[in-house]
Length: 124
Image 1 (cartoon, one colour):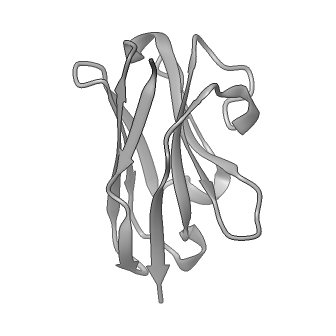
Image 2 (spheres, helix red, strand yellow):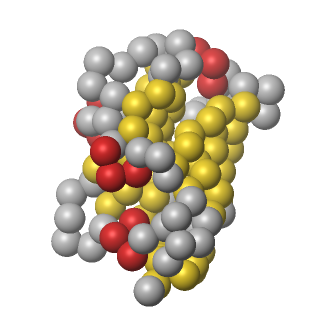
């Protein structure tokens, strides 16, 4: 059974950094495309960063240059390093995965497996 468990969220001042982790179990993540998504109150879930099974990365424009996605296949873990955080980054952050490649990397509907989310709150 596929399980994704996020950790690393928290409360941080604007300009600060956080690193999110997503521990995967029940499958070998090198065969999967994985990504980070977020949902703020009253807003739709949006794609933040994705690393597909081939290693290609995609970022939404608002986080380019500030966030870095990485994957440790030996540990079956996905990471999101978030620097220069802004209040508008405040959201519940989810890890997601799908077997194989992705056509629409940042589209939440294209992913089959989801974690429970970890809250990130950035204050000014």
